[in-house]
Amino acid sequence: MAEVIIRGTGHYAPENVVSNFDLSKIVDTSDEWITTRTGIKERRITAGENTSHIACRAAESALKDAGITAEELDLIIVATVTPDNVTPSVSCMLQSMLGARKAAAFDINAACTGFIYGLNLASMFIKGDIYNNILVVGAETLSKIMNWQDRGTCVLFGDGAGAAIVSSSTERGVGSIIIGSDGAKGEVLQCKALPINNPFLKEQSTEEHHSHVIMEGREVFRFATGVMVDSIEEILRRENLTPQDIKFFIPHQANLRIIDYAAKKLEVDISKFVINLERFGNTSSASIPIALDEMNKNGLLSKGDRIIIVGFGGGLTYGAAYLQWQK
Image (cartoon, rainbow, N blue to C red):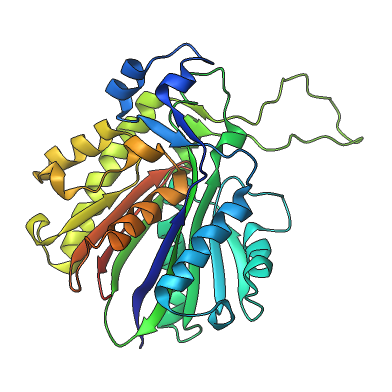
């Protein structure tokens, strides 16, 4: 059975930087209010680029880092909750934009855990000797689904994409992966789609419809802190490792308080947790691969480094994966 490695990484975020001060001009908030509650100082917000365009820039960077061409891709998986269209999918649009004419393509929706879900699928395809090179992308234009009058949500999120080339190898680069869901709690973090609207409805709905993110912050915090710690501990158990054996933990970049809580609960120095949310905010499925690529491109990863990535998000979903860096 083939082993799996991350062969290359890439990321892209729009050039338009929106600071906490900028947001204070359009909603009742302040830099102090946002920073103390979240750790976020700024985020990138698209001035016109849609999810497929952001995904393409990240994918091109990952292909270059991996040293392969788009024609060598067998499959494209895009994790997103903010596609350009209902159909065609972002992945099919990306296939065309890259010229990856041999690759199958599909999207998945696991919200902020999407990249881990995509990595899990890619790993199974490779270990099953079905594909050799798979592009996994987490890409979001969350600014499309923000209520820009709600200071409790609009200050949290940003736009961006992260990508990884996942390939077959004789070296073990991707180890244990766990994913999970708790659909019973899905309403604490949601964004509604189009309502039912046809001539055959017995009663026409009078409910006002908005496709905006709605979040119950305290419930999300309670869920996130629990599953982050549990997921990391389960990965460590499966790999027969201790927290001290791990070089870096790369968490979903949602809130500094969540990451700090997990670090203390695990009795791990927070310096081991990779944090860039102060510059990007919460980019949902893109946050983990963006952080991974920054580590890679800044020369902070060495061959053999042990890494755990961990995430949680709408659905509700959660997951974690063990990586051993092989570049």
